[in-house]
Image (cartoon, rainbow, N blue to C red; front, side):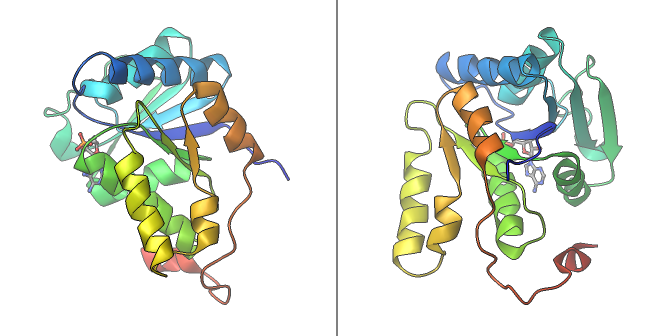
Length: 201
Ligand code: AMP
């Protein structure tokens, strides 16, 4: 059954990265998400790639929801032109809210914050806390080392093949969105688990 897709959460760097390629990719993803009628959920900042993806989506007329912890309001410079801006108590509440609002997650290039958010969303899928697609958006092989590590984890028996096979890796915004729509969840890691969300609340 095709996956329902209304809003997409984007994790990406609070820095712009070196050169223009990352900024260009972030703008392309934000623009296309909006043009195809999807909402964008992100960390709410107006810095780095996160600011670029949000501004591009707004410029294309899209819905953009920012979710930011109180403590980061000044540091990540809250974006002033969003459809909605939610202030949450802390980082944990931010990730929970971004996960609740979205029907899928994509990590664009970024730093340790981006990695942390991506891997947490992916582990929640593994545990059955949600059943939403997870994607890496690649720019010039940026994610190759991370994918090599994940493949090693699979080879060494620490990650299920199914989980890896259901990870979307895309290099073009339309490819990304089409694959979100076609996605089906991997087999559950712990099929007997009945209410995994209870562990988070
Ligand atoms: P970075 O990739 O390090 O530039 O960070 C990208 C985004 O991730 C920024 O909005 C950070 O505030 C956010 N971030 C970093 N660590 C966490 C965390 N533990 N939970 C939620 N967001 C985080």
